[in-house]
Length: 195
Image 1 (cartoon, one colour):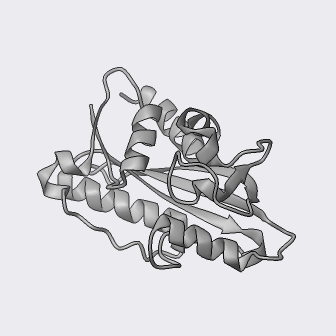
Image 2 (cartoon, rainbow, N blue to C red; image 1 turned 180 degrees about the vertical axis):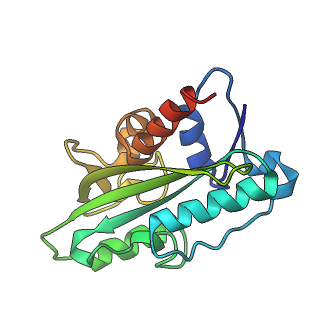
């Protein structure tokens, strides 16, 4: 069985590939499928669920392949849940620019509680059936960037029970505890029973 992992983000591709090792399952990415190599789905939904389903449906129906897409965001308590679904778009520039902007917004803030949310959507093009899987990871926002593993907000997010940021913990530890790991472990268990 082929499964299209509908993301162009190389960091996410690696994490998801590590989490979806299943006998009989062949993963492919947009660059492997000419019909969707340049597909860019506008993520303007109001929820992670809407964005994940929109992406999975677009890639599945265009490629005619079973597709999985995810939407992930960081919710910061002191910012009323922002940046949320706009995590990648709320501040222009690179990941480092966004991290610095977020740290600036929290200067002097005592409540640094936050959580990552991932919603994964598994979409069957032949039937239009969509299955949703959710993972969450709580933690706090650090006071500075630390670590060079990972991507996005990993250098400023310290998971509950840890003393280092996700970027310091490294990919192996991240894939054991992260929001994306929780969601895609559920995807893996579902697929193992349906291949």
